[in-house]
Image (cartoon, rainbow, N blue to C red; front, side, top):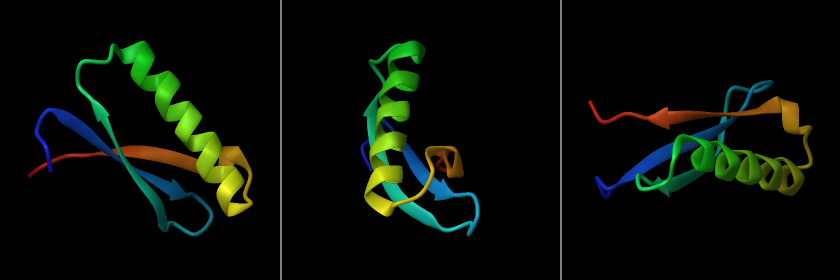
Length: 63
């Protein structure tokens, strides 16, 4: 993984399964990151045929 990126997983809250992974540049402001994550969340929900409110994201932290 590129350390200049933040990595996120999108999860179906009803099943608990990860349904998509994505990375965003760390040069984005917090508002830009949220807007991009919301856009990806909508696309993931549509692609998987589930309600947008069912999908949430978590940042993947390197341990």
